[in-house]
Image: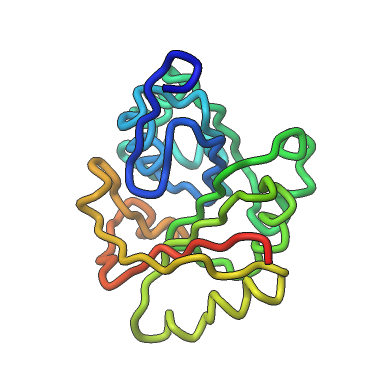
Length: 190
């Protein structure tokens, strides 16, 4: 028990963690965490897109955003993961976990490193087949002064309600894609 409240977990994430989610598409992952925790007061969920873009292109965007806000989540729009450490609102916080699921941007580790606590973790879920292996996440993280803590297999079924979206192409933003095989890579300060 922490502060009289039961700590709840869903895989790598705890209701006691201060969590920053970046690159959210329709916000279904952050909504999944909020449901598991029974609150979202410990979370800041961000998207590169503006709120009108999310509402226009994602069929569940409004529902997810409304649920997050009612659960106490801080939602921020037009946040570029490669420049997030320059955002004055984010700089006011240090996070236990920074989460970027299925990114299409490789250059965010340096920014994320500036926003985690000493023992914090940066979690990147990424496909592990084909050209996705060429990203060399471990090498990218290492060049930013981070070390691999763990690589754990990712199963979509562990996250009820999470609907993985393409997100980078306005023609297919609301389309889901096959995420297997994938892993969650946990990085921390070297």
